[in-house]
Structure formats: C-alpha cells, structure tokens
Image (cartoon, rainbow, N blue to C red; front, top):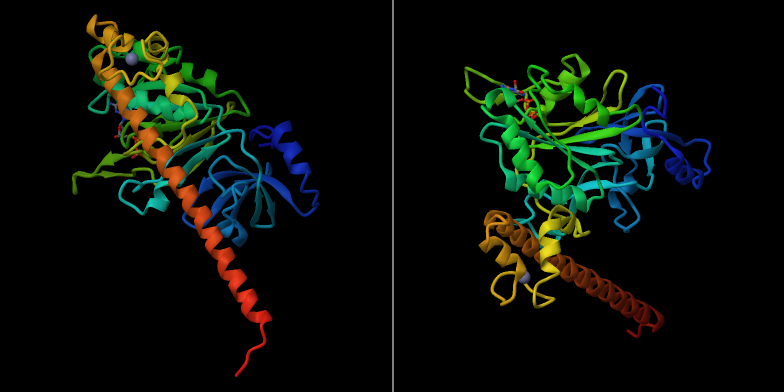
Length: 360
Ligand SMILES: Nc1nc2c(ncn2[C@@H]2O[C@H](COP(=O)(O)OP(=O)(O)OP(=O)(O)O)[C@@H](O)[C@H]2O)c(=O)[nH]1
Ligand SMILES: [Mg+2]
Ligand SMILES: [Zn+2]
C-alpha cells in the first residue's frame, strides 16, 4: 500500500505543505472506533487518537476526523485534519427530538469520496422514494451516486426495478446484482480503480457487507445472519471501515442507516429532481409552490400523467424539510451571535469593576 493507492494526491499534498513540520506524517483514516481511529500511513496501520484540541475547537475551519479524512499525525496523535475534497453528511441522529443545537449539527459519514453506492435490497427494502432521498443527500454533498439493487435473486423481475429507478435517477448508473451469488457484481469494479474510494450507503440488511466480501473475494466483513436462537440479526455492522479491494480501489462499509435526515442545502434537490426543476421554470408564478397556484406546470404534469404524484410529494416534503433546516440554522447562528455579545458585555463589566478601586 502506498499513499497514492490510499488516494493521496496533489490537492492534499498542497494543503499539507502549509504545516511545514517534519514531525508530522500524512495518513488516512480507514477506520473509526469509539474513541479512536485506525489510520494508514502507506506503510502500516496505526491506532490513533485525536488531539484534545480537535474535540474543543468549534471554529468553522476546524474539522473533526471522519472516515476517509487525510490527517497529519505525530506518533499516534492526530494533530490536524486536512481540508476535504467533499464530505458526505447527514442530519445528526435524534435531530428532531434532541436539543435545537444538536439539530443544526451535521454528522459527517465520510470524507473524500469518489463514488457513493446506494445499496437497496430487492426485497421489502426496495423503495424508490427512499432512493430519491439518498440522491438528494449525495448530490448535496458533491458526490457521485450509483444505485445498486441487491438481492436480484429474490425478485422475479429485477430489471423492471432497475428501469423504474433509472426513470427517476436521471443519468445515474443503476445495476441489479446479487451480492450473495456474485451475479452482476463484476461491473461495479469500474467505479473502484486503484486510488479511488467508494462508500456504501443503505438500510441495515441491504447487503453492504456481503457486497464487500464478494468484491474482495474473502470474508473480510462479518455479514448479518439471522440467529435461530434469538431470531434477530447478528453481525450487523457497527463500525465504519475502508477496505482495500485487491487490485482495485477502496470501499467504505458503513452501518445501516435508518433515517436519512437531509443536512446541507447545496442544490442537491435540484440535481435529484431535474424534471420538476425544468417544469417549475414554466410555472406562471416564479415563486410557485406547486401546491395550489393557477398556471402551475408541475401540477399539470401530474394531471396528464407525465409526473408521478408520489414523486412530487416526495420533492415537496424534502423542500419543506430544507426550508425548516435553513430557518433553524439561521436561528442558531443568531443565538450564537447573541451569546457572543453577552460574553463581551460580561467581560466589559468585569474589566470596568477591576479598574475601579474598591472602597470598603
Ligand atoms: N438472497 C440474498 N441475500 C443476500 C444478498 N446479499 C446479502 N444477502 C443477505 O442479507 C443479509 C444481510 O446482509 P449484510 O451484508 O450483513 O447487510 P448489511 O447491509 O451489511 O447490513 P448492516 O451491516 O446491518 O447495515 C445476510 O443474511 C446476507 O446473506 C443477495 O444478493 N441475495
Ligand atoms: Mg454490514
Ligand atoms: Zn408550480
């Protein structure tokens, strides 16, 4: 393994130069554990911890290490996280029920990705609306999606599903495969050239770890089994790990995702719904919400059967979520600003009190 095989390139090198410290070594985060990280420096794997400073520094430029990050280490300490090419983030779990503050924090699933595989089982897991949501999330993060419809062996007409997904995922490659038997898996290697990293996203049980095993030709990941004794799945993935595929790139196996909360609003929704976007341009009102206004081309398209009502509903739902998120982020920014002024006021008061000699 060399740094280049791990994905090191001029972009990261340029950023590393600025630190100009011979005691710092570049390494990539290939595994995330509870309070530690597994990093690879091109020669070996090292169990490392993040410098205390990284836990406390919440300035916008300060990054906390995530899977796929390039970092600078000093022995076993991660001293700096280098700027990211991209980062796959979602709303922090518990965002809806948690404190407002946690709601406006994103969770970085992984950084510096070349491809994101959306893995969807062709069993009860199959859901076109969820795929649309994944696409919005992935486009928002500036990553390239590929849809993998897994467990094709369990479905009577997997190609019909692939066609259905293609009709909502404009220009996105869609493949029906069986990770278990290996059928159709080989074509995925085109997205895994040496030095590139692909991440797997999908529900628990979709077959992500099975796919990693099939691609590596070895049982590198424990795949879920249903324990007869307890009737529950065991071996469900709980860690994020980047696995090198022999003779190819790297693949990041993630724990299954239950809820895909949108986080960024970087135009991903427009990329995921280019059909609605094009129709909306023709609506009578430029700020048409496509819900009740006259002269709405989007609703007309639904009426004449060109656009599926469920797709429009999904789009509007996500649109509202993003608006809500923007409002909360703005509110939180205002609060932070207010708190900063409060601190300044307290400081000024203390300063004033100090200057004045105390009279007993
Ligand atoms: N029939 C069939 N079963 C599959 C296929 N791929 C995976 N499975 C089974 O689906 C179950 C779940 O597979 P995993 O690979 O553990 O799923 P996962 O996505 O890694 O799940 P989490 O780690 O919980 O997120 C296992 O029992 C696999 O054997 C497939 O192509 N066909
Ligand atoms: Mg797994
Ligand atoms: Zn409209």
